[in-house]
Length: 495
Ligand SMILES: *Cc1c(COP(=O)(O)O)cnc(C)c1O
Image (cartoon, rainbow, N blue to C red):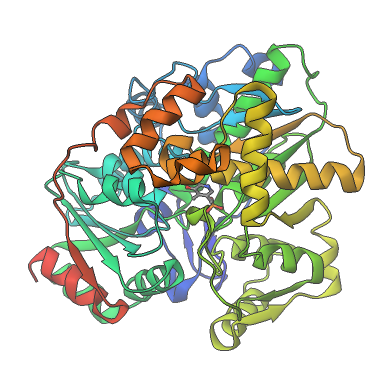
């Protein structure tokens, strides 16, 4: 029966794939990592003939070894259906000298839908497999996009409830409206008076609180996570890298086996880690280009080998990347430390106590495939305008960070390999920043007037996700301190 998942902080804590998905986080704050990443033993030419679901099955079945074929196909078929506005699910488009992988065609128009439309299926299937009778309570911290995507995925799913915490002043107006208008009866949303890191730290604290877990269990509940610390998020994210590569093979742009670069606008390091895991499975990647905004803690890390979160948290026009503690980097640290839980736990202790850690030269050598850089808010606007002027294609602010960093990478290295850029959100989610980048005089307009302007300039129809919140009533209006998070969760659960 395949390999196990193991905690990054305790080599003796293991779980099957379904148990790891149910738990979300390992004990003592560790993350589950696969003991091995099996080779994807299907030729790329064969994958190139499959649709998204077919590729998803091949990739996910290698990683989630205790799911049966029937269970996994049920999950995949339920997730990647007409909730997406294109049968391609994740179309690849050529603009500005790169292959833009559009990951925003799901229900909430951000790439989080790629994993969060399947996570509820994986989680409820995992609960059944493991004879869990408790109601599963999803606790989620969001920098803006995970929140709505998780709410949409879990809304009214029997046997589950979901609580979402977002930074009250740290998300775009459209992102906030999407969340606070969520109608699902099992949902709860609260803004916190703090930033994303505060929300994420608060959620992680609740996860590792044993007394709280016991109190929940006594009332028939247990926590799980919809954040990218859950391997049920990461594994579905590996799929689209393989999928997009095989679309380039199908189009004759590359030959099976040719190397490509991958550029990922990065926050919590989940999306780029999924690309790295896909490469360990056999995807031929030359460089993983990690693009940051002004919160450039990862750029500094890749440049110096020191991770240091002691700095000001900057609110940018790419709020979903406004993060100083990139949780999933821990999985990479564990790996470059030679899968050494003790060493990793030491570094993470230093991060929580001193806000920083430094890796050894030996570990740094293992990062040779990673390139980090960042784009300032000004560069993000310029890039949106530049790409729009070229051929009328409108980037969102996060994708623009990636494009700007890719331009820097090319300039620095002269590397001309075919390159896939993960496009993580629709520009409709960040209309004000996007439209004022194209035409600064539009700043005086209302948010939904800007939506209409964007439709005019982009010639892309306004997505359903935006239409439906124009007039929707606010359902959730809780705002709390980070210290109150536990109390409001208990209130939501009635305990
Ligand atoms: C979440 C998000 C990111 C960052 O992804 P990570 O997996 O956290 O690195 C980038 N762009 C958008 C639009 C997002 O929603």
